[in-house]
Length: 400
Image (cartoon, rainbow, N blue to C red; front, top):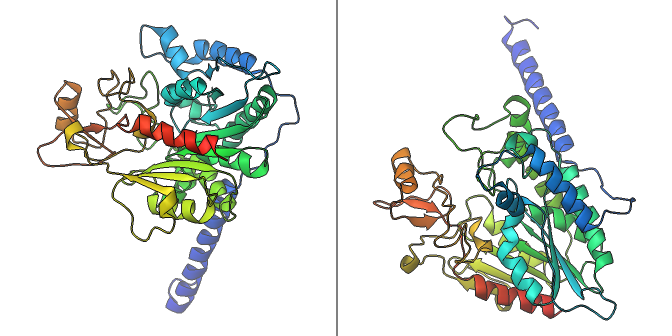
């Protein structure tokens, strides 16, 4: 190239930019493609899978509490068994739940108990890279997550007499969607804050992860984890989430014809909630499907009989808005409830407000990043409508 020739320079610069863009697109396409996962091996029993997971966690987990056994049980795969069984000694119906990125099976502790009381065999899995230390997510892949869900979903269909439903929170929703589209025997789906599409620039995660293992470097005065979740996730974790969300959107180009329950917070700081609203109305069109929308009533609802709206601004509860993670827990939850021990003060607030929150100041609750003058906001980790929400869910599950 002759750098003294401006025409030659511009032509070559344009070619160089096109080269970079093409390679970037190729990298993103490669990163977004998920290899088909199907297990031909007979899956382990849930008890064997749970015991193996517990053994590994005892060796590898970075414990946060002196009471290590409680901490293990909160993070381990769990099962809730109904009192009544079918004529062949099997539960009549089953549900497998899958947690979100950086989270744990504790996400379903309130819901699992209530659904078991209604006759469901309820199980959860622990996704690889979780339950031990955030460092274990540096090299994990979405295929590993999907494989464990495939194995235990298949096992659950063998262990119950009738219908099997799948449920997921955030990233977990993407994974169970993948299984359901490929296995028509699944009776329906349950979604809480489904991660089908996150906010803009999620596509950068595969690129960033190549050069920056952490967005927040460990040791920068940010807690790495709590007794029940990771607070700092490596960029590879976000890359794998992105891959599952791209896969979910590809699947959602086609309608899903089974009943779907979905709960979404309008002010979710993680997800594109307008996309979720449109997806429910245009892809989950079974007459028994229901969307619970926490926020203001959306405009131009095309399926008003299938969408239930509840206000998410509740001053009497000191709640300014609902959060991504708060939909799953009862106000009585011992860790995340109204008086729970695991208050999340890392909520996008300034250091002064965070310190006040950590020192027990009276707080309001919101999604990540929300601010209001003269108020300290912690993350909302419980749902005041939890009992009503569960009743709506049961209507969907019981009426196909």
